[in-house]
Amino acid sequence: MTSINSNSNSSSPLEQRQPRRLLVTGGAGFIGANFVQHWAETHPDDRIVVLDALTYAGNRSNLQSLENHANLRFVQGDICDRAAVETLLQAEEIDIIAHFAAESHVDRSILGPGAFIQTNVVGTFTLLESARHLWQNRSDVRFLHVSTDEVYGSLGPDDPAFTETTPYAPNSPYSASKAGSDHLVRAYYHTYGLPTLITNCSNNYGPYHFPEKLIPLMCINILLGKPLPVYGDGQNVRDWLYVRDHCRALDRVIHAGSPGQTYNVGGNNEVKNIDLVHIICELMDELAPSLPVRPAKDLITFVKDRPGHDRRYAIDASKIETALGWTPSVTLEEGLRQTIVWYLKHSNWWQPLLSEAYQDYYQKVYAHS
Ligand code: NAD
Ligand code: TYD
Image (cartoon, rainbow, N blue to C red):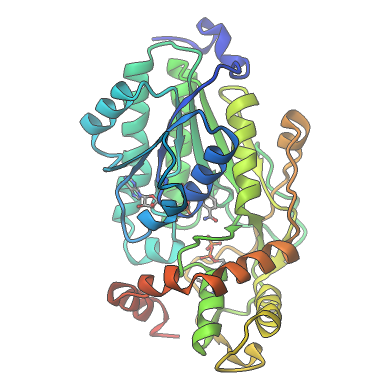
């Protein structure tokens, strides 16, 4: 068994060797696709291989803008399939794994936790085993595990923000499965010396966000003149991060982060849900040429709360700021404006996602409101 100290180079940042060869799991999902676009723009000579099972949340068209990018390959496959993962890692000589693939929606984890354990825990384990087997003590490789602030649980109104040493206290099947995967990643560094990096970030928003999540759901329902379902009293707080800022942070972590370390990534944008919904309504009133109901805020409807609904998340991002020089660049107002304009221009992207299966899901979550 390799101890972390026997692999002395693994504590130093990645050398600037180019070009790199990345495997991006979940690269057809929301953050993964934004990350692939970021990487292709900023490191055009690097090889990018996307491995994605194309679940309901995965969408090939999220990568359409890169159709002619010579160094991008898309592979449809499951991260739980060890043979397929190892074949790909070997054939493509992958030296960076950026692991985004997950079941990611809390409400779905309440309806059916099994898929979350399978992909988030077993899938991460499978990737770790494959990397351990093929990378054998190499220090010029990286395994980036993209995780969430939800593993830290819920804050009271006056609690300090989550730091990297805040104890884990997950409250939903989603956050519990992500916590389990974080612990496995940590263990593979400490036990086997695998050069891992973990990031725990706050709520992302931006283009290609699947319609089930708060911000796109509100934008789309306003355009359709449907009620805007706000859970409970609407006083829950989230810390919103523009997705492209998150991608820049992940780039910094891959290139300059120290293996074995965790970095929290947040937007410094704590907002109560009800206040956020009001801001979205006002921006939609201003930006949408025509709306079925105006002002849009007339659609706001308080509905039955989500079971186990965490009250507040807030990220202390001072470690990544100090250690790696990353700060968010987009204000919430700017980011929301850009996001809303994107949804207004891309109804051809989101309309097909409101499928029969999506309507069934919507019924199940909101029927008893
Ligand atoms: P998403 O649900 O939009 O995308 C997930 C992607 O993973 C999809 O393309 C899906 O097809 C793919 N996938 C699912 N199961 C798979 C499997 N078994 N094998 C291969 N591919 C599979 O998720 P997202 O919002 O882009 O989140 C990406 C990562 O970031 C997740 O790990 C999530 O936990 C984490 N995260 C997300 C947020 C957020 O606000 N969205 C915040 C913090 C952390
Ligand atoms: P969501 O986008 O599901 O992200 P997460 O649960 O991972 O934070 O939800 C963000 C917040 O918005 C959360 O407090 C739940 C709330 N919410 C609603 O009030 N109504 C909704 O229809 C949805 C989807 C979320």
